[in-house]
Image (cartoon, rainbow, N blue to C red; front, side, top):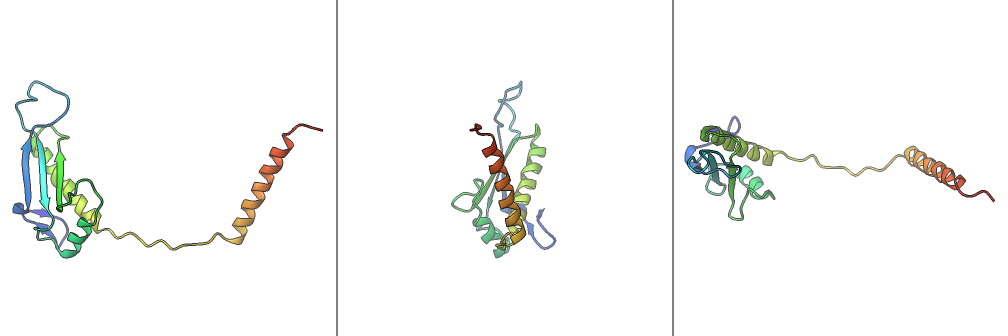
Length: 136
């Protein structure tokens, strides 16, 4: 059971975890152990509320496929248990980040005084540069 928030939880059957061999630099047991974890989570078949599903499907994230499946590969740690916990935590963070609503930006205009200050500084810089020329 993965707890997303106070009211939203994901059951174990919704998340598919597969152990695979990790990539990267080799060692003595590199070709023997399957310590990396592949996590697959189907958004459409999940028990998430519709609000969560719509937000996740609208994401432009490379971890979300066209079919609406989230794929996370965790191979940072040396043990399968740590990688499994890492993958579940990353899934939780992805779901929570999709629900954050961006604050609407209001267009503003610069004040008259700030425009005047900007133009004065431009004039001063131009005069300084003009004085650098040859004396006639």
